[in-house]
Image (cartoon, rainbow, N blue to C red):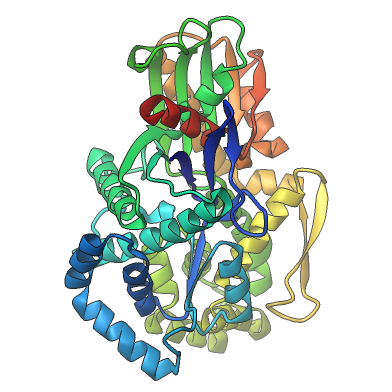
Length: 454
């Protein structure tokens, strides 16, 4: 059986063909989209879960040899934490979020691990750790999909952004694809191919076109924005090779996660002392606040959780004019609830798609604490990422050396009126079409899988 697999920065989904139509498979609780999150009782237990769930005897034996020291350490971690051999220690999707909220200080939580792929300067042990995180997620999602389908899935097409990172070029992309390929093999796929995510979204849209057109596909996802200029229509979709139809590509690691981060910094961090003064009259430094919300930046998260940062925050509390505010940041660091703060930014962003102003509860920081957030503040907070998204659209059009007949917008982030207004201002009177903001990439990947494996 073959599938299309959208291993996204915000959500994951899997599709199969059913009587000529794409069917998205229920994963958890009947939902077809699961958050791209993982929670483990201890980060050292992730490799143990991976080893247990590798189905191929030869692949499992090879993996155990490669990770022998880590797996031995995992056994010791279980004993130290008094965790039984049959007790579940790893959770994915909504289960991961629930466990993180209930036990933020006790386990290891990661959101959008795809955002870390292709990061420059990783040591080999860090690459291996990311392999394990992605593998564990793929194993869990594949098992859920096969349970829904009551059939094994052995072949898949996985979506990929044009560029995984803003820097690093093809070396970063190769590193990311290598990690995904290794993870797919360990998850049990006998064949795994990759397709650009904006092209996948375009393939899904193309089936509805009655005439040939040049389309700018703008896919604004959780971790990346990708733009493609593509010739589409009845005379193009019958082709097996589409290389000549792809006129321009651009992509960068900027997406919904960046909007959440910028909004969280702008809207919530003043409640934690950002912009306040020290007793000396100087401003409280902003770097610890940025590090707290940059949940898609490995180095920032390491720095925020470090002992050196703890000592810095304790000193800031002693030096602050408003100790109560800065102490909230110290509590955020000690209780590991910074991911929860950024999740509040995401919830605010979503709510502001339908309202001009919302009140966001922040009771996990302090009982009854809340903050009013307006669409105007949101628009102001995200100007930096929005400018980068606009530049990517310009770049794709410039590469193609022609003007698109229409713009096809997809990706969950593109639902925001603020984003839509920016796209319209950038492109003028060119018609804008909306796709299935969450399912179009999965549908396109599934249709391409049918061409390759059907």
